[in-house]
Image (cartoon, rainbow, N blue to C red; front, top):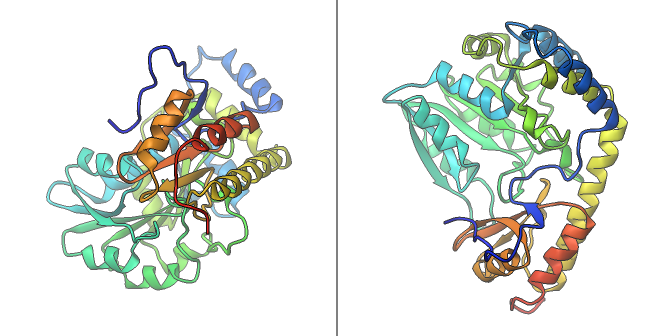
Length: 343
């Protein structure tokens, strides 16, 4: 059991397990959703061509370099179905996003997990060493889920240049909007030099549209064409399309929301560090509490306080950044758990 279940008399008050936004869609986005819902008796586009063009223009790339799907995980499945099958392998870090090994199994491929480094980073040399003639894809997650660590921008080109061309690199950037104070790779320029690269992004996290399931991939035209061949007809509904298009027009408001989440993340990190917890400089919309701190007792204390967190027994606890009240509840619960003394 990964997440402790609160006692029956302890309701879940703060839902901090799934890295969701604490904010509902913006008013302008909700209005667009309602207008689209009024036409729910009509089919959406067979393939999401209009949405693809809008995302491409927003990203500054050609439409033939964008694939849209059911969340970034849906695009990842389309990609793996295009490149992998029975007898193949998919290399990824572990621990990481739980969907990666699941998606590999759905294609008939075998996942090859590579342990994280002691400080919660993906082991780039270890990932490269795990690639062999059966490997069809290798997955990077930056910021990493669940630790929030980054693949340094300076190390990414060297990694990509060492991956054989028959292996597709999946760079999952679901949390990239929350990065502050670090240089990020120019992903729009990378596919020209690395046509085996697909960058994944999503409207679920920073844009607060998790329930509507829209993500996209950026890559070379050749690779994107293969991903699009796996596109489910009518797979992106009209309400989701309207919400994304309205969100693209609401950039400043959404950036302000992300800034508030980042500020709360930093407050939590500083306060938890002051309580003696070891909290790394994570770059996602979450904080990561890692063993050997008493993470299992911390998870139990959070559950008893009605805080739903993502618990990896013996490894760590990932806490989604919520609003101020949720953060205060976390700090109160964890202040009663003994940790090592601050240094």
